Length: 261
Image 1 (cartoon, one colour):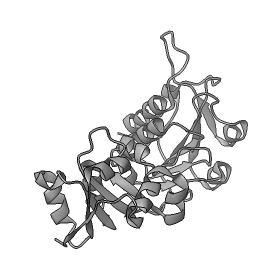
Image 2 (cartoon, rainbow, N blue to C red; image 1 turned 90 degrees about the vertical axis):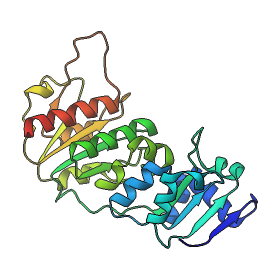
Image 3 (cartoon, rainbow, N blue to C red; image 1 turned 135 degrees about the horizontal axis):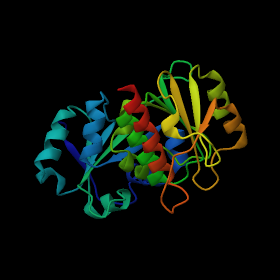
Image 4 (tube, one colour; image 1 turned 30 degrees about the vertical axis):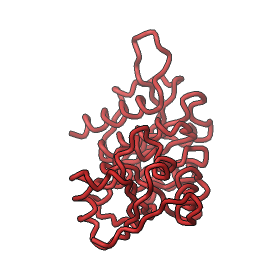
């Protein structure tokens, strides 16, 4: 394990760069880096074959056996200890477990032509919803997710926490022209729409498939609806007009899983 450096001043240039990285999507895009907050995300990243650029701990983290084991598992990755007050400025958790990992954002490795089971997400703006969708997509076995420019930053700390490691087991492409993605996708594109006549459960979800999911307020754009081969609705016998985007996506994904089993 390398020697641990210590930062105790908020004027430290490295600390300032970490603070910007934790709060600004622009900074994450420009550097191609993000922060993983907590031992669970770091473990998921390591299990997926990732290697962090830098590890950050607070003063109490080294007393934790799980964190100590993770630090050992990272070998020669540089480590820095932050004073508790500085660590709390970077971590968004109310009770941080004292571990942050600086990583390079994984590059997309599955394009629309080669994807077998994908999501096309249009203007999913809520970070919690987006993270939950990515978690469900990973659990259902999606190989690729394509996000329109209006979506939340997929690699923000909030989305990463809600994704629970799902980010690291599939390809995520941001700021995509979804009409171009739809044109390149060689399978069937299914669009969720409250105006559709066909039930999700009456749809054939076998084979090469992509679900198009829109903003829960506005739904999918007319252009993306027109690009889909089929529209469907999720039956809701209760007195609620719609599900949120994360819940609706999970229902769709696991109906596809059921049909494919």
